[in-house]
Image (cartoon, rainbow, N blue to C red; front, side):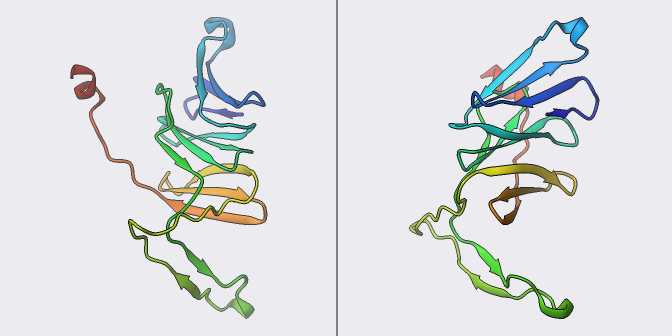
Length: 157
């Protein structure tokens, strides 16, 4: 469960593979809201972005989805990666982590599923520039970019 930063909406995750957003206060809006479907197993967490325009979910289907509030389909789904940078497990005595492999993403590269099991938690980090996922005993950090667009232009076409 996550309450929007402006405290006007509450997002909940569910065992029926959905995430729901309800308007607050309940006594005024009588449960009015919307449902987001896109996972194929139990949704384990939901978080609002700092500007309350995006939602991030994690699921036992081994994926995480990024949603734009008011849109029914996810705008980004994280479940596999092409190319990855790894580091040493734990730096000794304060030493800096060293990169042990770096694979360049190529159009013909093999897609590697990196999530083993459920993604238990997902949240935004550092002014919503990063997504942090908890998967088994791994902590995965992703930087993402969403192009800006004028939704009113799309509606006119």
